[in-house]
Length: 386
Ligand SMILES: Cc1ncc(COP(=O)(O)O)c(C=O)c1O
Picture 1 (cartoon, rainbow, N blue to C red):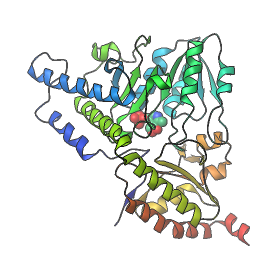
Picture 2: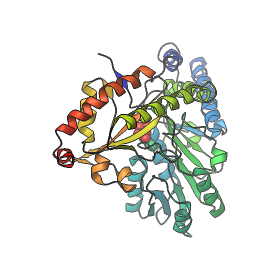
Picture 3: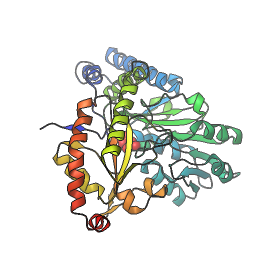
Picture 4: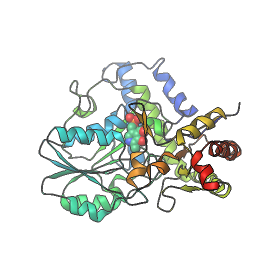
């Protein structure tokens, strides 16, 4: 059976070159990077070389990179590492749960949190941010690219506002890394999260950029790894994989890879819109990462479409989360003002470095019939048609 994987915002396959780079560290180069003997020196050198590659991707100094277990840990380290009870934090309503839930926890620990609204295209208004600031605002945390819609926030403007007010600025760039160029100085952030498995490195590795001079309390206490910012023996193979993936991600901006993906995404989008009635792109007219497309198919239950497409070999996803047995519509799409029906009718297509033109063709071949069949079963659709 032909299969097309179009769910790269959930996770990406590890690239062969990344796996090749990692394998020696599961075989002969097994040393603890803190050991002073030959074995430790080998792995220490590999960790530091990977740190340089990740720093190059972000435009920062290697010493400003802290390796973590992934995006969730990076976000948690940034939020809990900066704030104390009594502080005020500003975030947005469309953050990933790796930021939203730490914010809720901060509230229970005595912090005040402002959740900024977004407009119909999913962007915050920098003037809302300015108005939200208070004398005790300690941290602004606003994501760079949204995982469901791919929408890019005006992070450079947010960075300027934060710098003028002398407030720490963290951005979750998990869905931006490798898709748009990143430069922490241009963004003006003090903290920035990335995750390996969203850019073709393995699951379970990530990094947090921490600007020099930032007062960050660790989440984990133990040895003095990562300059005492993240205790625990380093995941050497994962770090090496992240370093290799960071280098490949950077190359993607100059070797045509990112533009190839953008071309495939644009073809996917325009063909679907041309061949499907009552469908539209969510946030289609604002800056987005080039690999993501969120499309609503009115009169269809997104989950049903995901399952039907999976049976035809195409893997995509909805932004919906299953909580307590009920399917909740996406908090991102509803925050943008979509009705819960339209939010439930939305699918996310996300492409990666291994997505081919044939993958997109397979989707475009099976989608029209699948939609027609599901709509035939929809009482609402049939009522509207008659
Ligand atoms: C925007 C965003 N932030 C954070 C995370 C969490 O990253 P991880 O899966 O590495 O913990 C994700 C994962 O989906 C994400 O999309």
